[in-house]
Figure (cartoon, rainbow, N blue to C red):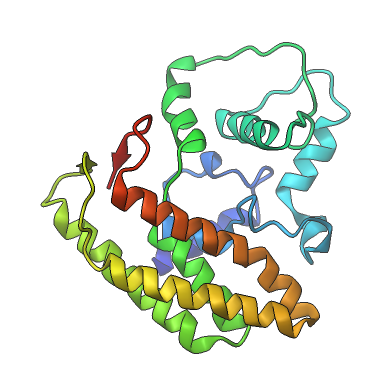
Length: 231
């Protein structure tokens, strides 16, 4: 992981886009999670790195363009945000026409955006946030529980690349992960109550923690018949 992280950091100094699709290798989710920021984590104008943010730079440039050439990752990110907010000018400017080249790649990328995924990196980010905000014990417990859970899932696949979940499952170590996630939620709540700058930061992570709990329950129960669940 350290070697991959060094490669990503070196690339970050020279890339013009900051887009993962421009990398010449695929970093692990845990490595990418250390250097990236999802929509739910973005602090917007409060972010100390807002002036160097690749997303902000790309958005400012696109707002003055008549023709925009982008990739499917950014396009579908735009679609997801537009669907959830009712606004079609947040990620990309509003547009009248769309031309999709290499469209055979679109389906798999769209699945990543319109579905959802939970990875060990998802929980590591929450654990790191807890530790930085002073809830060190809760952060360590969440980090360890995530490692046990995802390690157990790898074993449950018995060498297969993926495992389809077809009925409510008893997933390995999920009870421990759910318990530590609940403790993390309460820790973020307490930090918010204490106020200050840390409280503002914790308010970003509280809904993410709740969303993780909801997604875990959905995966375990295979509760939406319109979805296909993979582990």
